[in-house]
Image 1 (cartoon, one colour):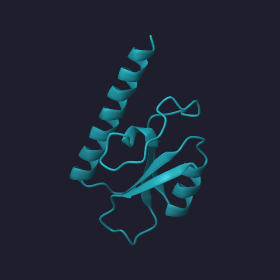
Image 2: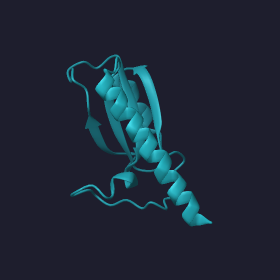
Image 3: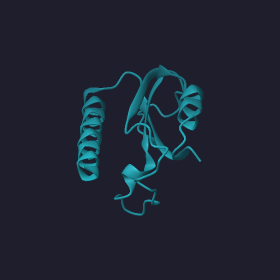
Length: 107
């Protein structure tokens, strides 16, 4: 079950190409209200965040389905406006902080 959830953040939701796609392991969403719970210690987690710009929705879904752990697929307009770019950068910052926290707990 690679794609566990899809979050569509496009302003032009009926445009399927080009888009920017990003994934994160679904366990990152465990603290969200009503979220399904996924194992944060999943052995198949190979990345905490990846992004692919300028692709079709079809390719984004295929790409996300190749991960072995459950992932959340985020979909953005390819030409991100300032607000979306800031949101994406904040998300990446939060994932890096979470990764550092998890790594620190393992030692």
